[in-house]
Length: 341
Ligand code: DAH
Image (cartoon, rainbow, N blue to C red):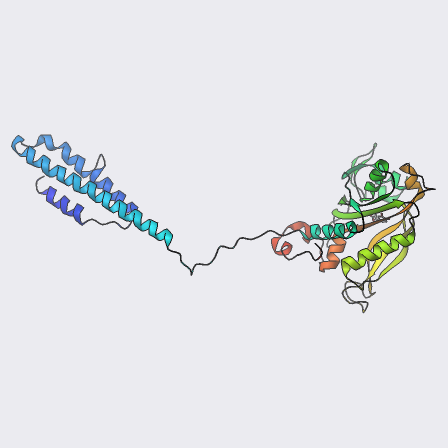
C-alpha cells in the first residue's frame, strides 16, 4: 500500500481534462464511495498500528490533492465553456425564420371586399347548412328545378329538406328578411356542390354574392357597379360585356364577361381565343324574391350578382388546377401577394 500511494499521487497531479466527462470519470475513479481513495481508507484498520498514523497522513494528502484537482479543473472547464458562448462565429449561416403568407383565396376575397366597401357595400355572412327555403324556394326556384336534385346538391336531410348551401344567394334572403331597404351588401362564403373533383371543379368552393336594394335601382346601376369592380380588380382599360342568361331569382338575368386581360382581345388559352372571359352571374332581383322577404316590389327594385372566388383567383394568377387551393402545399401558397390591400 505504501508503494501505491506515490503512484496514485503522480497520476492525480499530472491529470488534465478536456471535458466535464473526463473530469467526472476521474472523480468517480478516485473519490466516489467505491473509488480508490475510500477503498484505501477502508483497509487502514488492517495496517500495523505503528505504521497506521503515517499511512493516515499520506492518505489524507492523496485525498486532498484529488479534491483540489477536481475543483481546479472544474472551474477551468466552466470558464472555457463561458468563453465559447461569447465567441461569435461570423461565418456560420444565419437562422432564417419562414413567414407564413395569406392564402390566395383570402387575398382575392379581401380584395373583392375592399373594392366593394369603397362604394358603400357592407359585408354579411350566413350559415353553410341551409334549409330548402333559403337555398331554393325563397329564391324562386320551381319545385322541379334540377338544382334540387341529389346529383347537384348535398342533402343532410330530405323532408324537411336540409342542404349544404349550393350558393351564397341564400344569404340574400336572410338579409332581406331581417333588414329593410336600402340594402347594399356583399356576402362572401363557402358553398358545396355534389360534383366530381377535377382540375376544373371541386365539391367545396367559395363565392361572393352582392345585393343592392333601394328605390329606383336600375340595370344601369348594376352595369356601372360591375364595370367599376372589373376595372378595379383586373386593371384600368378592362371592358365588360353582359350576355342574357337565366337565373330563377333575377329577371332579367345576365352573365358578365370581361375583356381578356392576358391577350387583350387577341385570343389566348385563357379566353379560349374569344377575347372574353366569363366572371359572374347577375340580374335585377325578381319581384317574387322581394315579396318572399316582405319587401314591397312596387316600391323597391334591386340587383344581385354572384361570383366564384376560385374562378377569379384562377384567372388572376393563371392557375390551371382548382385542387391546388386545397392541398396547402407551401411552395404553391407562398407565391401570392395582394395588389389591392
Ligand atoms: N347563385 C348563382 C350561382 O351560384 C350566381 C348568381 C347568379 C348570383 C346571378 C346572383 C345572380 O345573385 O343575380 O351560380
